[in-house]
Length: 88
Image (cartoon, rainbow, N blue to C red; front, side, top):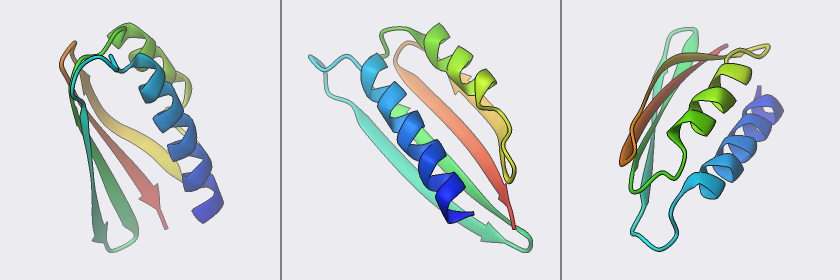
C-alpha cells in the first residue's frame, strides 16, 4: 500500500499547491488514525483556494484506487477537509 499511498498523496499535494493562493498564509494538517483493517488519513487545509471546483474534480477522478478510497470531502474557498481510507 505504501507505493499507492505515496503516489496518491504526491499527486494530491501537487494539485493542492497549484490551487493554493501563495500570496496568503496557508496551512495543511494531516492526521492519521489506525484502526483494525484500515487506516484513515484526514487532510485539513485552511487558506485561500483559487479554484475549489478543480479540487473537487480531481478528487472525483481519484476517488478510488486499489486500496485507497475517498470517504469524505468538504471544499470551500478558504478551507477544505478530505478523508481517505486505506484498506489493509
